[in-house]
Length: 253
Image (cartoon, rainbow, N blue to C red; front, side, top):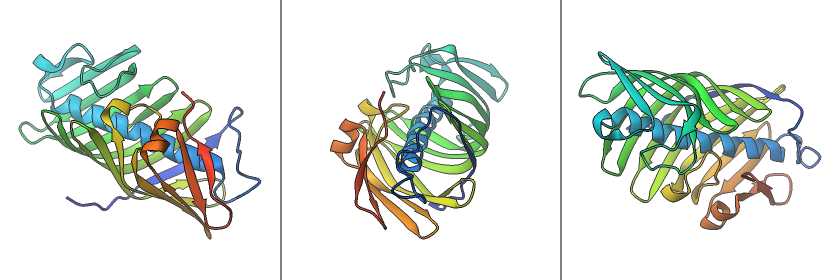
């Protein structure tokens, strides 16, 4: 399986309500960019795993959430505006949104879209293609997201990217190589090396329990290493190239 990823996060819009807490320390990689990078990848892990499971699971045995309808090879999976707790068991949170896909019979390949899919104020939309398979608790999914938008509270990112997910009964792993987030002046490059999130801790916003993330912008660099402690606390310590390591609170919900 290819581990090459071409991903682009286009202009970042941060309106009132988002405080750039690290700008005074590191103007290139402020704490806010660290926080948003982990948040976006966290939601992508949850949505990608749920999407892969929904597309692979037989509708007869999938359960009440999402509801599903079929028109030939096309499927619609509806979580609704009020949301529901997924029957997949991937999360105990209420998910909202819509998946519309056409699935190649017997191959696991699909093409379609997700619309405002996520939890609470963290939502993901965009066109998708990929492959997925599920056997019991084992999940394999390659998801190519284009013309995408990620929103969380007052922050909004437009992006495109390829996600590689692997799930077991105990954990879900995300691999991302070479993502980019573009601000007003320069590009933030993002690499995620097999971040691992326990299934019982899979949420719209969570810090992984293993793996790492590297952020690079101009001449600055931040390295994030995930651990069981960081997962439990919702914090991650970022080691910067030009200032002392500092904890960043990623999730407060």
